[in-house]
Image (cartoon, rainbow, N blue to C red):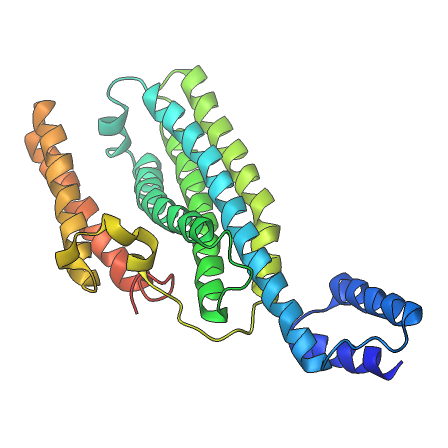
Amino acid sequence: MKHVEDLSAQLAAVGIAGRQRTRILAEIADHLSCDPDATLGDPAALARQFADELGTLRARRAAFAAFAALAVAGVLSAVMLATAPAGVPRVAFSQGTASLGAAIAVLSAQVAFVAGVLAGLRALRRRRSGVVARAEAVVIVRRAAVGLAAGLGTMLGIALLATGLAHHVAPWWRTLAFTTAAVGAASLAAAAPATLRASRLRPVAAGPAGDLFDDLGSLVPRALRGRPWSLAVLVAGTIVVAITAAGALQADGYDGALRGVVDGGACLMGFAVLGRYIGLRN
């Protein structure tokens, strides 16, 4: 049937292939066999409709899968840190392998948290939308991918940390750290196929990608709306103050201030490097 052949070519043009295209064509062919005079519309328009709806659905699934996997990894990491023997942080930053692992874990965890939460938040805000713009779907999938990659980096950092602290911590805690890294990595890997599928099929609808203010909405003070760098500086400054204060409460003001400055600087650096890529700013 010519209509099915034309639709097949148009589906391929918008990125729908494999079993998905075969299933759509089979349904259309079956519909036409039951009603040869059925009006199905222009094949190109029909293909775009399928791409919009499937691309939107896959982008949301990728975001939710990434968020869930990162949540599992985050809970495990929190348990590991909460049960860490006293003195582990200081020892960690005085050993070669452990120091490298700690640095990787800390920086990667921040990126994973921001990307994963914002991916889930945007997908949640668009949960009732049948179609989102291609640019917005791209941002959602990028956030999911960056969150998963950074999450895997965090698990690698934890494994390196546990390796470097092999002779400085109890065997049970080292085992817990390795288990956290393994189970966390497995959960993140399990979410990767959804992101890969979403990256292969995107909506074709036009529209803006949105930015951080679309994600946070009324949570952003009116004076900061439309000023992404001002918001980033405020967040970074809050991080510096909070970590410095926590260090002072533990009679470790100098180290606390140093950690605060490093974390605040990392926040701004991440915003500068990844801000456009994951849709934090235009």
